[in-house]
Length: 417
Ligand code: ASP
Ligand code: MG
Image (cartoon, rainbow, N blue to C red; front, top):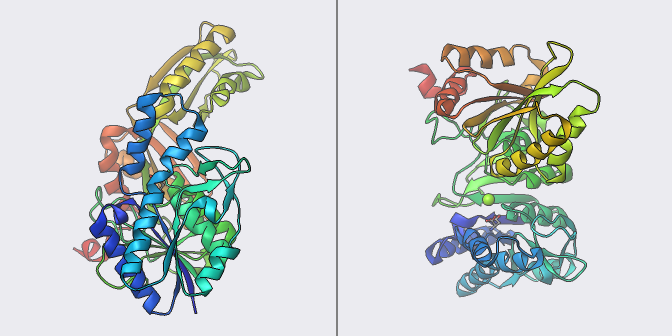
């Protein structure tokens, strides 16, 4: 008998009719002979609302109280789904993080899972009970509730699947799989039947918001068979294939590029007249690290006069003000001549594909395609399986559509016509 972990995101449990729909799906899975552990998010919008409540009291939170507040959304949906399942004649029980217990480190609001004591939960599953687990939350060594960072229910589901040795982890969401790009921008986007863990990891961290990055990392490490599928499709649950995350060797369709992602969440900073001396990068970026600001896409120019250089990099847009503050202080210490220029009006567009490892010319296709559309590239960064460029935000849609066509990703029927 297969054991399946199914996770339902916020839009899938947004209200009572949605929860009833989820219960019907779970019933069908159970009737197919599967043992089910179900992980739920909070109702759509609820976590945001809870965070707002915290902000209204004080913007500088005691992280322990923040976690005890924002974890409550999942407590509600897990109880409601257990009730809806019981109403359908099934045995079901809700589990909060502390009841399992799902143990985490001490890092409130972005805690990492350290261990899951599954003995009790597993016994109940074997006794024929459906476990409805509140996602996103755990308990730390101090006995306090912790949360796993935004989107953390995905990670709860994958961790639980790994701990239980589940046959599969199904992530139900409001899209029916992972697409070659955002279908709202490029109507010719196609659903990928399979995508490698590695590609999904890049896509998730580059802005494709289907899965929390950490959950993909964990699925890859623990080799959890993970499927992304829609909870709004009225058809059967897991028989209707979504996108399966698999090992690289199992990806049949070998496009050089499999996905085009974007992020509107960054801002660009350029420092001019930076003294070109040993240790300067450490001096510049040290204060940003100290302020917990994640720096990405760093480029340093060669210095034309052997004395000064320029540096350009990106930071999360939400951290721009904090970054400028830290850099201004650095400037006072390092050299008053350093000039700080910034722009929030940029987007990062990335192409991702494991085929890049073995194909030349992938970057050139990107550059030529953007050139043909008259789009200026402000910054470039690459890894083994991705190329990212920074462009002006007004060109986002145009760039994505053009690249989607250039890499041969348009839907077959569209490509022919
Ligand atoms: N409810 C949490 C959030 O909105 C966790 C999740 O949905 O995965 O971030
Ligand atoms: Mg999510």
